[in-house]
Image 1 (cartoon, rainbow, N blue to C red):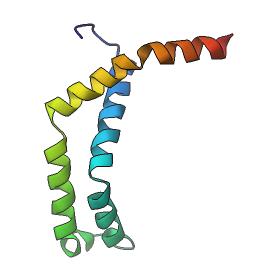
Image 2 (image 1 turned 180 degrees about the vertical axis):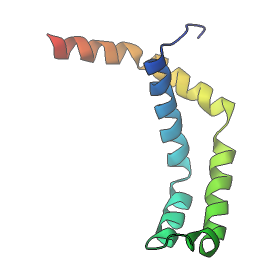
Image 3 (image 1 turned 135 degrees about the horizontal axis):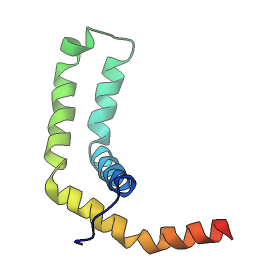
Image 4 (image 1 turned 60 degrees about the horizontal axis):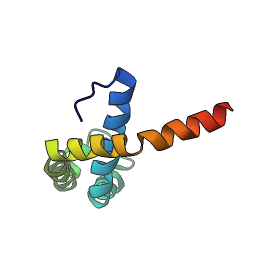
Length: 90
């Protein structure tokens, strides 16, 4: 959709995008988080395998196509959000 979005609307699209990427990589993120728990600097080398797997997953899913899908989802739910906001204000 060629409509320009405001800064806050772009942020909403990014939130959808990041949520979708994190959902795709939830297992890898969980593995890294459990490895890094109770570690500070040592997590860098102790959890290297998990970190590389997590980053690889996120890079693989953080594509322009995924951004476009997030934007499409935002436009698809725009009217629903507008109706909900009007209902809350009434």
